[in-house]
Length: 494
Image (cartoon, rainbow, N blue to C red; front, side, top):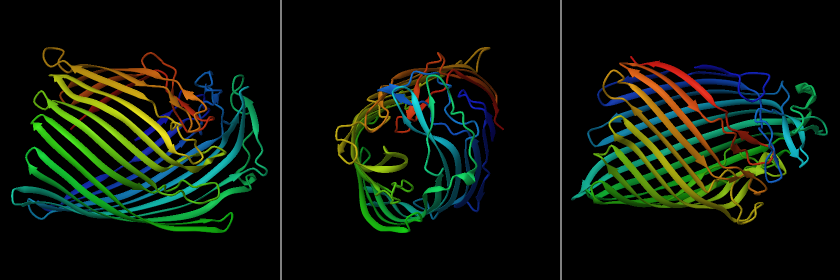
């Protein structure tokens, strides 16, 4: 894949992307298969923080106005290689073994949006980040089916070994001077990009290594055809070490944690399933470092869920309704005083309901619809006050996408699509100092299918709504949504 883009933002340079991803599957025998995958990808794009916020909302300025020097750049190069081996011992037992290597090399040289005043005066400072990370993932598991009397079991036993290493630094101009522009009257700062050798102030320079061993066991127990229990657990040992070269300090720690999982499904009648579940999760904050060079504590989460699932119209239409509560600790968030670094939020609790429906209502008429209500707040204060809502979390969101394809006659294969996507008001930062406005985006599609050919025309943001897609968690960085976009495509399968 190769893509070049001159986006709607007022860049003086293009976005270039390149990707190649070969894959090979070898059926060694009827019972053994191995698949090899590789990916190489690179992308060069202008650096862009979007539109700053003024007062309690994103500034009312043209969405294509850019506040970056035209010579700024952000580049990424990724390389991955993996294999997955599956061997079936018999009809009941299967072994899977997989390994993946991934390297990510990133570099940027940009003007960082630093502070914004209510007058529209934006302060920016030169930054350059150069980082390299490697990931090694090794997984092995066995899945088996057996019975104890009349009770059926599906057993899963496995082990994960993971290693993540990183090194990198950030450079700034001596004294870290600011450059100013007014977002209401001008675009990018009229100052030439300095040479990389001029950025002699090193504020971040270090490396880290993080190792994780996970052992897990799960049993899905079918007491009857309509009553099933899932019970399992995972034990993790997480070991990390980081070296901050700027202060010549080393941080080391080892964390051990057991995380259980349990769920039950009951079908009072065949098309209807009632379920409930409880689970915990343990997720290292791999590369979220604080300004003093230490690594954030791992994120810990706990989830309760109860729901109902229905399958209708001969299983062509599936609907789900669920209520949930999720509690997370040590969630990484931008440091309000230094957005290049992170801090851990003490605890966040999210409660809500989700409803989705998907399938074929009539022959040729498909629909996907969803609605979510989320009540999220900080429940344990750290640097964020209790009661605040996490950034980018909307109380209400909903979507509808439906298509119809003519099934018979001379117009057979001609289809139409229509979609609505709604997102409610959301806080732009954890401090809740400003808000991202709600929006309703309309999409449409026209397509024609004949034999193994398909021609399509997709329109996104049909009515050219001006909206903000998301915030990066601080006032100076809010990404606008794309204006009306039309994509034409031709595809053939053989």
